[in-house]
Image: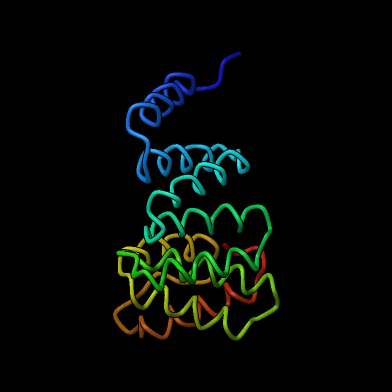
Length: 167
């Protein structure tokens, strides 16, 4: 039985893009594709190639950090997310949150908590998406008229960072 999707067509199109227009964007897209399919060795190779074209492309460091995070290479994940943030990624919430997860895995809980709180404080889109997950996991209760939303979010993020199952 074939899986849903047109994976063969997708990778062929990305291969064609890399062949006809090699660069940070084409290799980055293909690296992201591989990462989403949990083909981390291929993703890492493409992201390295992408960074060789543009070593200051913040999004590529975020993607590279994700690869390291999912392969449990937490020190390198922290370094990649840090570089992404130094380069001023447009939407920093993901980099802060993901770096928090890597720091938590390294038992650097105070730093993890700080990054997680920063993630929801600096990126409203990230907060909106993460709040759905925090509600679903029971860390954040739906708000009422009397709810101090900022405190509720801080408490939910704190609880999440204490629970290794919370991503």
